Image 1: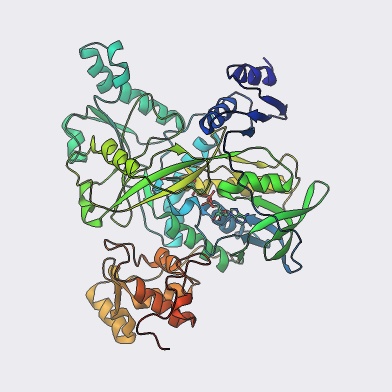
Image 2 (image 1 turned 180 degrees about the vertical axis):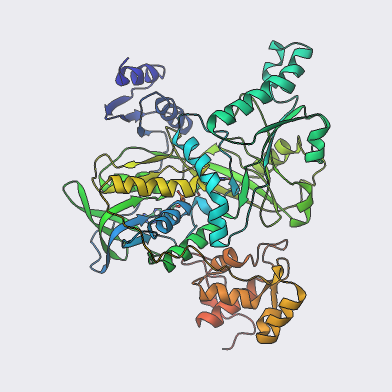
Length: 580
Ligand SMILES: Cc1cc2nc3c(=O)[nH]c(=O)nc-3n(C[C@H](O)[C@H](O)[C@H](O)COP(=O)(O)OP(=O)(O)OC[C@H]3O[C@@H](n4cnc5c(N)ncnc54)[C@H](O)[C@@H]3O)c2cc1C
């Protein structure tokens, strides 16, 4: 059956007048449906048809608000620079590609609309370096996840970023196949859950290329993770799963790429392109123009709008929100591994979330997976918090589930084909899409970067090794990691080491100053680099002092110190004690 016939067959099931065009593997949908969830469902059904490479979903629904990057009426007459390769987007993907390209002799720049890197999906996720067991066999996600996971030890070692291979446990419990219980009567149910199902999960992982998978049964389960509920029937143990701090890694990639010659334009939003026939010649930003020879579209949630702007509409991003609960470090000892209870049928588009430790000792529960209308919807409802507590306490009933110190939401950049879209743009000769990088984007990032560089070479970019490439990056030294003698020695040289500003995370003034020296200009930028404000009190005690240090170091009035973005100042006038 031809692709267009298959698409028609899917669309005929819906009571709407939907028209479509199929062009080179891309399906363009137009028409109107009633509800947002139908827009998602139809897009996904079409995206799953074999041979579909992208779905541009222009169906509208009642009350739809159009998300669009604002294009200025007139071009800003300011030449910012000219580069061989310009990457759009400073998330973990853009920064990984920037660092990878800095291993070659070429002039690279990265443009990020935010005031810092790691501002999009990259700053609100679990930081789990997935092993690659979940993605379907023939996806790019699967291949790059497994490869990326294996690259983490060396990468984090070079960049001096904490990374731990804690391993993950997939728990098979009486709830795993609840909906199918009636088909497996009596003892058959338990036999299936104890022997056949873990074996099937292990086989799938092995087929995906994941190594070292083991099956645990009986007492070995609780020797390995003692806190689990005692009705766990069997466990699939995957030792290669890791955890990393996603924004610490992205900042490290950024600092190292910068050291190796990549130019970063922060606070710079791409708003249009100037083309000669099918080739981009200039990138138009809200601060001026950047001439370029090649463009990498790594704009996350907005990668579809960047593709559209460039004249190569090939996919639509459907934002999918995930809410997480972050628990107090005091509970660190409660969970050693990443835990997930297997539920069949699984969530159609998510790995289902779970419980995982973080490299800093907090525990994360989540994320959820809910389709949302807006790419900026990071709202968290009370009901969702209850839902997460309910959902995961089934495996850790003794965990003090109400002791979370923060909740937050991130929005995944999902495509309707549910795979990463990494390929040369179909209608623009010099643009590479590295788009729709939803989970496991963190885990895959190092491999995504290598793959992107290979594709740029195929697109004609000549890349010769940079003999001067320096792989290492010095971290900000942390008072919390020092022994008493070392801390005393530092204090002897510089009293700011003894001035502990954030007592929850034990962050000294010296560290905050180092972060500012490295380019942090806002409270959140300091926080991401030092962890000041990330502890139990969630910045209640240290906020003012950190703002004062930023004010002193950058020589700006205290009431101009920002939380992060423009117009996010903390204080709206003279602050008590501040000199008039
Ligand atoms: C709740 C949640 C949990 C997750 N958990 C995990 C996990 O445990 N493990 C894992 O591997 N993955 C996880 N992920 C997925 C992971 O976070 C993403 O795959 C990854 O961060 C994608 O990075 P990115 O660089 O492609 O996108 P982003 O981080 O979104 O970066 C894109 C950047 O482009 C910039 N930009 C956009 N438009 C423009 C423009 N016009 N001009 C200039 N700049 C622009 C944005 O400001 C942004 O900084 C999770 C995601 C979510 C939401």
